[in-house]
Amino acid sequence: MRYATEDENDVIIKDILLALPSMSEPFSTHAEALLVSTTHRAMATAQEELKQSLTSILATRRVLDLCIPLIGPSTSFPPGKQRSKAQNFNIPTLPRASPAPLLRQLHMWLTPLPSWTKLTEDARHNVMEYVAEALTACRVILDAQDGAVSEVVREEVIATRNKATDMCGCWFEVYSDAGAMLTVTDAISGLDPVHIN
Image 1: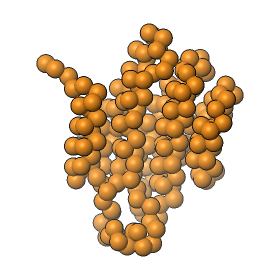
Image 2 (image 1 turned 90 degrees about the vertical axis):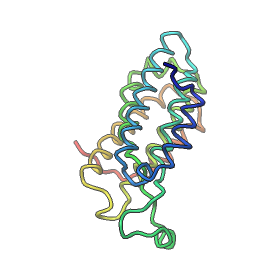
Image 3 (image 1 turned 135 degrees about the vertical axis):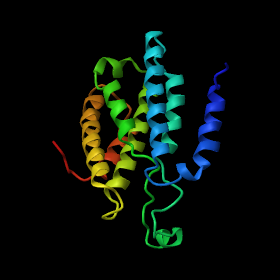
Image 4 (image 1 turned 180 degrees about the horizontal axis):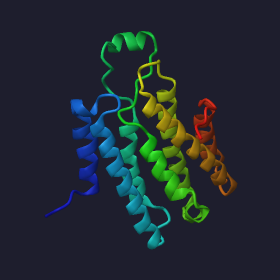
């Protein structure tokens, strides 16, 4: 049995799976399942790379790159919403999947500062960009009109988002890339201060 190569996985996810109608809806269960699976694979890859002192985590970053389209805008709209109306009223498009699983895994992996400090500057910059993408998806969800997002999803996003923003403060203490920090702080600044204990 031959497993798909990295290039083949890229084509399978981005060009085939994301084109399916079931993966194009807001909060698609299929997109979320794929996000969870891909995120877990990224964390396992990171563990293996760091064991081998591969601190640039290039393979991990390649897998995490596949997560970003899954938390990006869906290509269809909720019932009753037409694309033309959404564009006219500047209604943000909800993501295919909640960013909570990605943020949760990044938090669990990188909260211990020793893990964070092992990464190269370039790898840290990339990781912050992933966090910023996830926080931007959080903002879209939390800014959505009443009824567009279930309370369960909202509460999960808020709780996970709060842990991620707390985590960022620890990262900034050991990180010197101003550009990457600005990327994340911009994403954080657009979020409301709501916290759930």
